[in-house]
Amino acid sequence: MLKPEDSLQLRSKNLTENQIEEQLNCFVKGFPFLKIKSSASVERGILRLTEDELNRYVESWDEYLKGEKRITKFVPASGAASRMFKDLFAFLSASHDVPASAFERTFFDGIRDFAFYDALNRVCPANEGADISSLMAAGRYKDVVANLLEPKGLGYGSLPKGLLLFHGYPEGARTAMEEHLAEGAMYAANAGRAVNLHFTVSPEHLPLFRKLVEAKKASYEKRYGVTYDLSFSTQQANTDTIAVDLANAPFRDAKGRLVFRPGGHGALIQNLNRLDSDVVFIKNIDNVVPDGFRDVTVRFKKALAGVLVTLQEKIFGYVRLIESGNYTPDRIEEMIHFLQDALCIKNPETKYLEDVELVLYIKKKLMRPLRVCGMVKNVGEPGGGPFLACNSDGTISPQILESSQIDMGAPDARKAFEEGSHFNPVDLVCALKDVNGKKYNLPDYVDTNTGFISKKSKDGRDLKALELPGLWNGSMSDWNTVFVEAPIETFNPVKTVNDLLRPQHR
Image 1: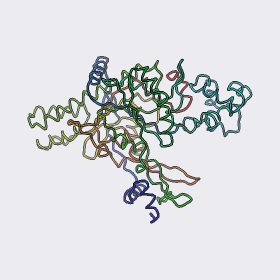
Image 2: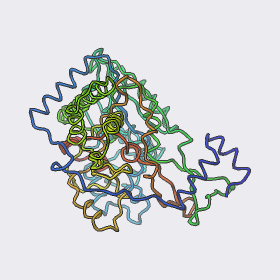
Image 3: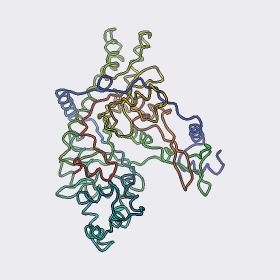
Image 4: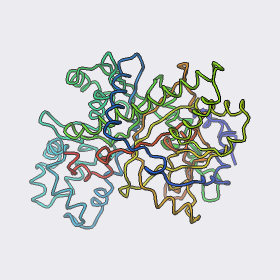
């Protein structure tokens, strides 16, 4: 399937022919569904904190911050905002010139309430000879939208969400990226008041992010009394995956070159792996709120981190005990109960293991990256959720799964999926080092069988694309995972531009 002339293209991406053959084989054989025991709930697998527990874990995190550990806030921010404006792009190409759909009317009725209104109102006179109000009065609604989305105006149709003005303040509007600066200062500042933030961005947008940082960093440091260490990374070229046609042959462009596509957010496990941090917060770029709504988010973020470091301390104590050899049968039983009750790892086969085998099993399960994941009650959002899944080694453990990983043709699996009470808002706190302070090599804990295949098109031709195991599902499949119920107030994503009109974003 590959041609001799393809070798140069593969070398430019640091990919081998064997890797490409493995990817092509994935299209042929597909990916197996993951067997699930049940959806997770507060009755089985999701921790619901009492007010006293919440306060205690917040205190645990505040105490941890007094130490010398490195904490990083990791924000995937490479996605373009084009999907936010899908309905407005449709309006530009529609036959009608005035708002007709409910979405269009909502947008224009609330246009003055968008944080980007003033910026848009400055470009409209320059390009159209009239401000927004005058253009709307003249029925020139499409000119307003064009100045919002197209390069002649604000160019929002091709920018990433992180660079869009999300929230208005008396002193001026803030972008989504700036809100992460503010949020990070409130729960991730160490004893020296240093805040480490890392954004994954697209190569073409990196200069714009750097420019924004140069313009805004000093003012936020002064406002919050911190110093920021801001870093960026891009998705590595060797995480791109080959596209195929509907017959599973390599898809080629008009010049005969192989077509590659980004491997999805699962590729970011490599970016995360390069961080030298003890604790990492992970949160999507669009799930931020203005200052007036942030108290709940900050308090709960601290509580999640408190749960993490409390569990980690317990894990490290058990590992040290095992390595010392001074454990007793009672302590082994205690460790088994910790795996079952605190980490929700079940394995009925452990009762058949000899003592030495049992201790090795316990140590192997403890010596893994750890994550604590906030889960909100299901509000009908598409996407993944918390489940208790069956693993290849016979264990049942908490996993974040997407619908594509579940066999919806199996009645029991579909029933478990549909009965799910909680949703994954991508609100994670992760511990990336072992008891000796050595970084785990995160790719070692990826389940390569959890990718999926999607249908796309290029130049009017259908193709199939290969998505790598997602960052918070398949790429973290072999981590120790704990689910904690999160308040719905902590989940405020911006999927469409009109979401910015919701009370939580104003």
